[in-house]
Image (cartoon, rainbow over all chains, first blue to last red):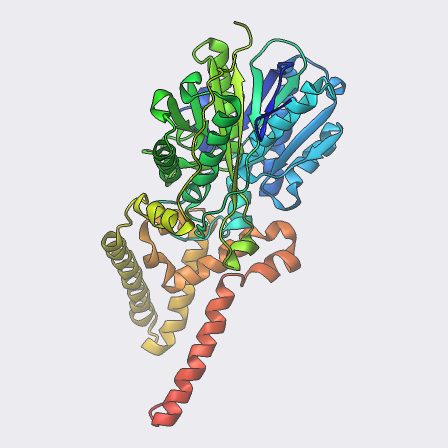
Length: 337
Length: 161
């Protein structure tokens, strides 16, 4: 049901009955290492190309998510997913091995919550009983496609971010045990003219602000209604900007804990990740790996995940275009109580 | 569950210009002096190494200084390619910046890294077509610059033998 201008309210309370995360070595050295289902010790995962390695991450995460949900693969009715590679090949190829009706989506790094929102809407509307939402990214595929060859020696500025090698997938069901997806706010594309692809945080912050405010306006909720609000991958530069903008606009973000997945997935002080993590996998592995576990443990009751995405292509920024950005917010709460 | 009291937050009032200058103030400072110093130290050390190799060819193998310059460059290129292939050059470059990019080793790294990266697309369309992806512009603009320098020399009557 539409509530306000851009928020879907899921009155049937779709449930995340199983989720899984698979990550690479750098994430395995980060503070959340214990929360991931599988940590690969090597970036290439014994695959012949980076692209194959990224696909493997997603295939494994989907497989584990289905197992964790306790369902059979043929009970799954739809798969919704996307990634950062041209023509979202990681997801389309993983969907080939899944053999489930597939909807490919693209929202850059906001894909995690875009796919979760769509999966929840399918379930809420009665169009499906079991839907898998997934996304992935790999540091080296992204470097190769968007920046330079992985072994090329270029110095990155402190505003740059480090793409997460990881995949997250979640099974959304009409009934069962698990955290409940309450509502989702779909964001608008916002572009305030930042052109530096090494400063994505600053480019994406206004999109996060716009979606967070729209979410509160549509639902009538306040920041204090959430135990935790996290942005997807604004990291060390973008996150303080978003907080500052929200406070300026009169949103009392200091009444809740306002975090960022890009700052949680790595130890930003110790690991060489510049401003923090980014990529489709960033918000996916933190949400599905870490945050849902904290909800299940009872440490968190209600959270809002605002996944942020920069909708640029290597072509668009070489042609001097600014970086259009988007953010999608999904509210997740503890199932019972 | 949702409270009835409507929140109504005002929209962002900043213009793109205002936002860009605000975002600039939130950027962590870049240490220009520190980067220059590191580049000087590392780039300088590379050049000292190059000189040492050349001396080795001159005194160890009895080459003339001119004859020794080609094998010296080749040795540096080989070293850069090995370090790149071991996955270390990019890590050095994050510290050394221009110090590792400017010397001939940087040029070798740009070609080697592109060749490695695109090996998965085959020898012709991958390695062959992408090897000069980064190095190509150095060659193009190097040639263009040489052309204009040559013209200048011709006009001034200063160049050539």
